[in-house]
Length: 83
Ligand code: HEM
Figure (tube, rainbow, N blue to C red):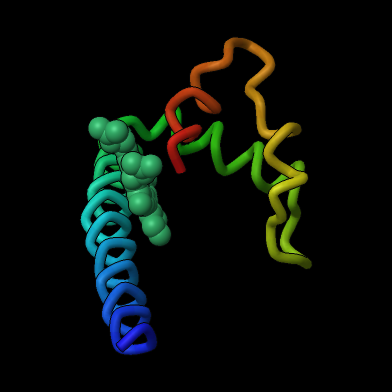
């Protein structure tokens, strides 16, 4: 009985995480890509920053996030902080 409840709780929790994570992540990425399409000057800055900090020879890591700040203002990191 205890293990049946544990199995059911595990399944429900997994569904909760999937439902909470899927639409929110998809909507945030959709917003970000439409925003970049509509604002090519921001897209250019983001591209320059990622090229400078991460480069093209490796994948980004969470440690790169601290360096991904636009020096003129902090707009870019603010736009993408939710990601
Ligand atoms: C960009 C993507 C995401 C956004 C914008 C987002 C946004 C939010 C917000 C605003 C809340 C608080 C809701 C409230 O308290 O009224 C929340 C809670 C939660 N999110 Fe997300 N979320 C995102 C991604 C994810 C992912 C990927 C997962 C799971 C893998 C997840 C799981 C949860 C869970 C379980 C809660 C409830 C936490 C609690 O009540 O203690 N979210 N999310």
